[in-house]
Length: 391
Ligand SMILES: [Zn+2]
Ligand SMILES: [Zn+2]
Image (spheres, rainbow, N blue to C red):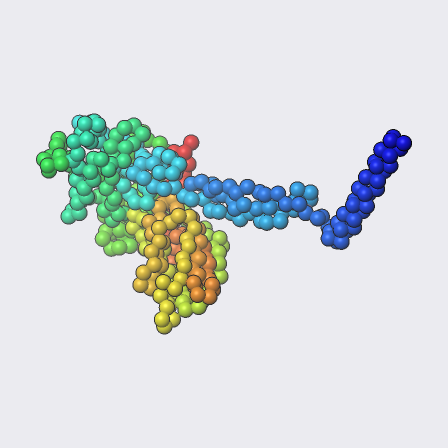
């Protein structure tokens, strides 16, 4: 009898399971409509790095594999420029250190700014005693406390002086002082142009020499465009004479093609404001400016601005400026979203310095053409140089 009851119990359980199964199958039929029922699994987010884009979190079905929530690409962050290396990934992008005599060296970095770096050997006791290094160019003086100096991988203390492309030939003088203002040792004098000449005549990396030629070309065309020098006297005059001036090899099409990667509906209107123009600003570091036209009673406080890629920006008056765009980032597309806080209307657009710059070719002004094309080559050289340093 007991055995009989056990079998019966088992049969009842099987029956119940069959009924539940049938109901589940029916439910499955109802909801699936001949398609997969979808069971989601999370697709992990991927953090972007300096050079590689990341992904937002997504969802995919574990049965059929279809994507339920698309992962969106997060643009690469770009390097965070320190005096000689990236503050985020540590990539050392400094150029060869050359001797200034008595243990001091100098180097050049092309990051957010063109940095002429004085590299000094200091002991811990020197730094503990305080003091500073004063750097002077014309009537501009910058003072960096020893304790605030960046320390390079080789232990040298770096005192970096930013110069614009129009200041490459001038001498920068650096002098160390005690905290009491007493000069210590000799003063060192260096110029970017002097550094460039020294590297170009030495046995440096090919990519380094190419970067320097591109810098001199770009700076020279900036000088010519600004009217401070002529083709004969500009900082790239020697390169021009030597036929190492490849701007003529860059076609207008190469540059205007960059506009096809622009995103967004362009400069359309939104509640209370519209963008009326884009302006390119440049010297050692490029700036993209967007001119806003506000309706009566509106200003930037009414809008929330987000810019991709960690670039510094400023909204004041009627201008939104993306600042300090380094040579290697001239081709980076920065996505700007401006959202009206009150009604949520927004405009989003992606632009790069070079995509905007290419529009200036339409002016058919030879000085501007040379400048824009040399800027393009400056960017190309920067990519090759950073790739060579990263290997
Ligand atoms: Zn599925
Ligand atoms: Zn980096």
